[in-house]
Image (cartoon, rainbow, N blue to C red; front, side, top):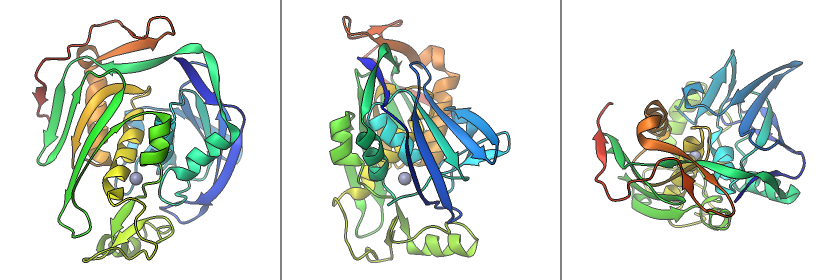
Length: 308
Ligand SMILES: [Zn+2]
């Protein structure tokens, strides 16, 4: 399996969720072994920011990255699309402090990248594989990880709301499955929270055009749901984006309950801090499908890590 980037530059603009201002986004092809790199532009200044869970500075409404007094918010849906489409190398140039929210899903980003097309590069793909089962938990929030040849996510949410309730979904990552099962699922919020946020001067760009909004009884959006379990599918999109912040595509089987951006980030930081114990770099060469440096232990019971 070889690394991938996009064939040529592609730009779009849209409204940011936080500030409600217009922001410009350009995606550019990057050479092999570059990884995913943000270029945050303001006038002539440009700060480059690679994927690193320690750049996460805020997780209130979305995942925000900060470096050298520059920030970029709401990165998770584009990063989810990059992980879903299995793109390895890309420059993401942003003029503005956040990525455009588009329709609240990853579908516009998928459309952009697929419309210019993807290009296979010469270098073999590299991923980080989980080597040993582990589990982190805090109250009802849980993430369990196990070795797996690929990326598999079993997600569970439980909201005491008549339209959501308990939803579970099992997703095995591939570009085809990402496009049909996950990319279209929109972000969601509750009317009481939206009102509170907007009174506090936040979520200024939030509207029924870019989020599913729920009151006590049901959905306020008149166009209905795209999937009856759109909520849990969107949580998988967020998880795909948040775990890419580890800096490389991640391979493993993940059982996730009631997590969110903050807990996802905590999990990724924990993995990185304990890299020698739980992770190995795997080069996916064409001849030998899997060449891990350390042999994964598939059968062991997860080590429960309570460090919250
Ligand atoms: Zn989201």
